Amino acid sequence: MRSSYGYRSGSAAKFTDYHLWKALMTLDPATGIGRKRLSEELGIGEGSTRTLLSVLERNGCTFTNKTGIYLSEEGVKVRNRTIMDVAHLSLGDLTISDCDCAVRIPFAAKKIRYGKEETDAAIKSGAAGATTLVCTDGRVRFPGTEQPVDSGSEDILRRVFRLRADDVIIVGTARTPEAAEMGAVSVALALVGGIRFGPESGIMTGRSNDELVSMCFAVHELVGGLPVCAKRRNNLGIRIEDGMVIDNVYDGEALEEAIQTGRTVRKVAESGPYKGIRVICTPIDVDGTVIAAIGVVDMKELFSVHIR
Image 1: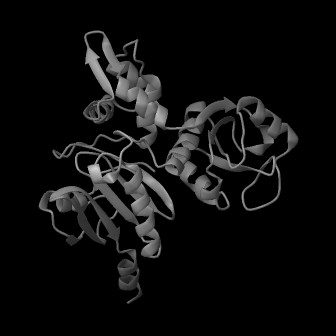
Image 2: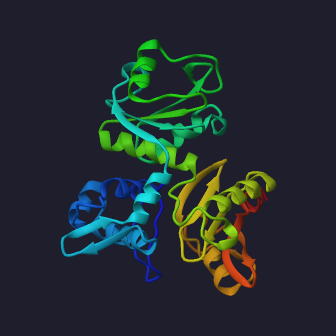
Image 3: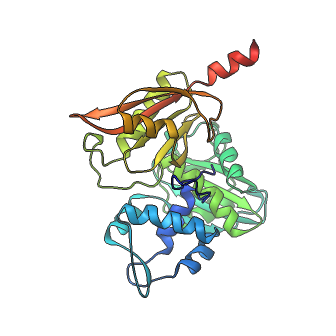
């Protein structure tokens, strides 16, 4: 789930959607923080932190004065839209490493199959693994089965969280609390559609990511599960693979070309995660203004070339 969002000059600054979330949780409306200290809190370089802050500032989430960087009123709203609870705890034999971090995502059970996808995503984010649990029929269970967790683990989770039917719990595990948190939160952010910038209005105004994400999932289904990407003008892009949002800071060149030219772009990607693969991106035009672009990655063409 690692991704990069840099300037067109070729900046190599890297951060993930987790780091955006962590920054929103770390920054405060009343107490300023310096960039160096924030960089240490996020665990990324100062160059990456500078780029991340430019994203937050461009979306009205932060302001800076002589005493430091502050979370703005809009930043508080963005933070509050990411509805999930996070807690560091210990679940013993339920997990496989030293430190555990659990995240509760309300009413997300329908998005879970068997939990393997979430485990794989957590490992990609740097955790040693993850355990996915769902709340059904009054118990905390392993997804895809009727098997409940042991009563001791369930008691711990119920003491920490106010659990309700159809809640999902992602427990990231790693050798450090930071890595466990990154794994669990990264998976949770993918399930909720990532960090949501802008007012809660529709895509027709070009200001909300919610309907764009829904559109991407619909296209993802229509094209038989091929990777789908999308980007709104002057905002972050997303990538969807295997039924999950795996990247919320995507900046695909073909998407940007479709937005800037207002025309459908068919090309072989020259960089990024789909380098060497054919992509097709088309602009979304509202009343004569291109507000976004959506694209499909033709992985089937790649496979057919290998077969021949």
